[in-house]
Image 1 (cartoon, rainbow, N blue to C red):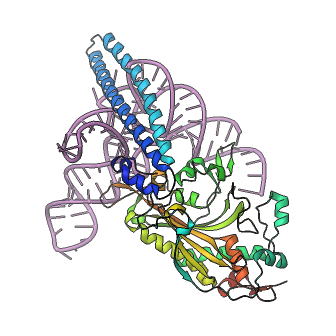
Image 2 (image 1 turned 90 degrees about the vertical axis):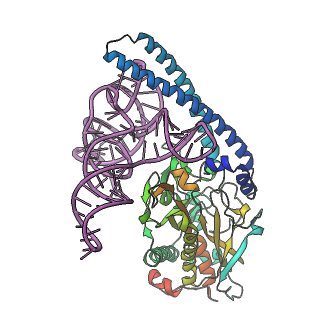
Image 3 (image 1 turned 120 degrees about the vertical axis):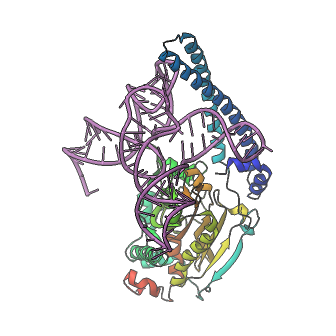
Length: 423
RNA sequence: GGUGAGGUGGCUGAGUGGUCGAAAGCAGCGCUUUGCUAAAGCGCCAUACCCCAAAAGGGUAUCGAGGGUUCGAAUCCCUCCCUCACCGCCA
């Protein structure tokens, strides 16, 4: 969330930056400012009363020690106490109202982010490799069916539409990709491997800003108030919530592979063919907790770490810088990595590398002690490294041979235990 | 699931009704001593918020969370959450 002091001191700047996203968060700024003013008034009055009570209570203590009469004083304190209870309630209500508003206001886009309403204003910053020259390429659905790599019909029997059941060589290929990516990030990029819980508390979901806004997209377990993680970003980023880290320990770099659960409410009919958009998928996720000065350097290197996966697999991709209107709620700047899918004849988003600055850290009270001994909020970043089903689809489509067998990229062969897939 | 113990500052840990935002130690910062390092000595060192144009300064809250008792709560009572130990059950 945004710093209330920034909103107070530079409301116009905040409104202006928020307006570039295209939402109506600007209106919430007026609301927050109103509640903030009210809250502070209440708080000040409350503090005066508390001071009064302390003073009188101490006086009673002194008089009692000197065996003086205190009945009159006690009656006065009782009155003050009643007022305190009342004011306290009103202050808490205002505090909560302010906090709830702040939780619903999006992050400010970084100055370098191109201004624009929709994906049309996104900027391709670079691309790598070339589109493979294939004559009449089969798409992953056809390839998967022919080589029995996954079975969507049977998955639907188990769980309904939007679920994947990888089978045989397909399951092995997915596992090979996971191991390949995790090993790469751990051994060559210096990330610490984590195997986190897949169910998290509501607070965590608020911390990384999936909630309150995106509740309709999340799977939750009502009974015990836990949520299925929509991405490993949630447990990884929250790992150090409520902590004050040592500056020497930054940046912290984590990698984890977890299933990701998403309702995809309202996405019906869009990109839903095959395994491109599903309710559950595996994803290797990269998360960094960084000091603010290094934040944007860390974003560049994180993006590079994710790109490396595609380079080693020989898959053509491009990196797109999202415009202000396409930025997710909490992000200040985002690079999407899009791999080429010959079957769809389109680029598929396989990673979204974002810098949240202190937006998430403030929500989860994630701080570090700077060299002056002052506590400051960390910056948090994350990006997929990479999402499995789309990577899987792009890989088999790109690596297909004219007889519809698949040639496994050389770097992946040791993990897969073979050089090709054919029936 | 049952029983018991416990949750205090960056960490360890004392504190059972007022003068406690909290002893002591560790870590950190500054100074002194020193060829350098080490060691020693001295001092400083929680957070958030509010008031103030700002600085200086002042104030309030916070001892897991919420509620209660009381003139007054880290301290007493209740509820919840979490941790640990043992027992039961189970991959």
